[in-house]
Image (tube, rainbow over all chains, first blue to last red; front, side):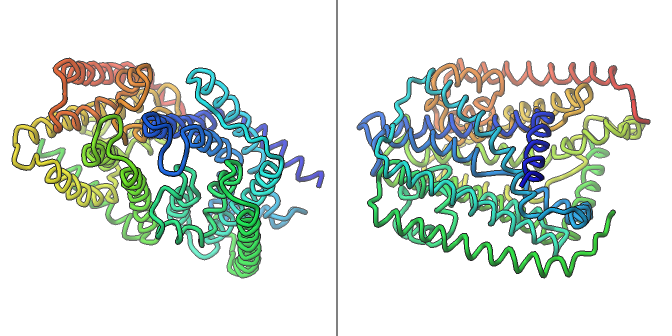
Length: 264
Length: 261
């Protein structure tokens, strides 16, 4: 375990060293925050609600999505695809580490820094806009919310890691990752609550793993679901985690057989 | 002019070769761009499933802002994608070889890579814009369409200026993508009319990163709600950005030290 903490620490320092990437990533998220906050605020200011959400719930959804994006979404597994393609991946094979956990801890450091930054951004934003935030005080919802976030972190990582392993089969893995990232970002509910879409779209999205990454935890926090729906959601999250884990294991084993370490 | 068109055409042929040899990669990028566009459009349509207007704008009026934002982004990507390769040129000092070519350095830097995916995307975008025009009843109004195209052209000058500023800053800082990514990220804020934002944010997006000039001004011109004051502001901002960017570029070239050669 100690070696992974070292990976975490090194990645943390690395992230702070390359401040441009950090600033750019945060700027992108701040633009999303501005856009989404003002869109929903405009839509709900006349009647105090929009679709099935009260104004306060919508702004809380936007604010918490901003926080969850920072702690769930990461970019380090993308590097894994690049490393497989350029051959530097070989160095991991001779180290006493598990590649999956190495990338996980490397990404976790980045997420922690982004999360701290997101909390500060949000505090400043709420201070200036005087926006209302819904403080959930029901312990049951808060506990399930925490569990769902943990599940989201693992589910997101497994899915992105799996897509990165495509690099074992093709030198053109970045294109599919770009496609996957955009699809996932929308289908996860990072931009808007999925239930403002028509019922047919919602039905499709509920059977995809992405909806359990952002939309599901936020519905729990807002107290929109009863205990039965929450348990069903967490079960779905678990099922997707298990399926993705199995796929990662199969892809890893088969991919390693194909890997030839060219480029080093 | 003919010479530059021939050069650009040759660069497009080279880009085409690269795209053909990486079909899976570029096919996925293309699909990714379509997914991004479709989901944002879905968001706009879903919103109008629950309301009649946003900040006083109707569905097709908002769609004009939305489509213009994507149009301007795609135009920039189509013609100035070379900016993303420029940092390498400066770091490796291969800019030396560009400077000595009998062609305008700035032209070559910006256009050396053509994004054929975005050029392809322009076709459905234009079709959707014409469809939105028909829904707004402006197809039979050549004056409105002329004003739209005029301010799209002015917006494109601002887009070009932002790319030139980015190139100039690269020579100094060697971090090419910083500025241009700030601009590209900001275009997301232009998907909806600027009136949704508070006044200070509108000012920021008018004068600092002028996406209001690039996107909202043409859209408002088409809708017939462009005020004389905002039209004049757009022209002044375009002139200031363009001349300022050229001056900055000339000054930055004087600072180029060819350090790695």
